[in-house]
Length: 154
Image (cartoon, rainbow, N blue to C red; front, side, top):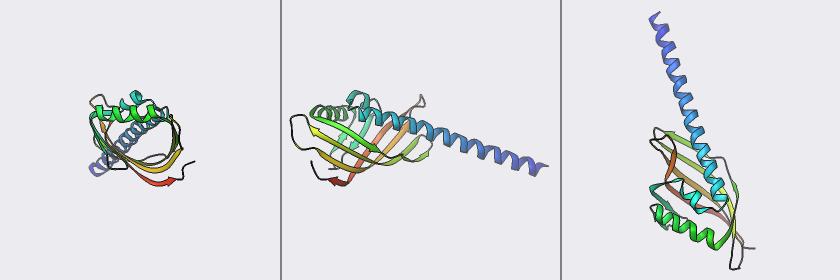
């Protein structure tokens, strides 16, 4: 009887852990989707709201943006200078443990300088580290991307 109760208890704990992990991944996926909506809208202030104050972004050229002010400046300049379109972002591969999660996905985007010029198009891989906050929300603490397929300008 004790052995049976132990097995039932172990099964219940495993089920709770699986349910908690699924809920955690759902929360991360919701933030991921909301971030992409803000980025696709080319709204720097809405995008910045997804970053922790001490976040670090590293772009595909290795340029480091350290802290929310640097990230805001970079996004404001880019979105201000370009007509930006986020064409596609794949569903993320999510790996989570405790208060940290990593998402990995592929994106396709293009932009045209507002001052005139050729449209740039590219495909890249995007890696983000998220941290759960005390209010249970998730914020980006590290982000980097690599261009895997620059397309010809049009």
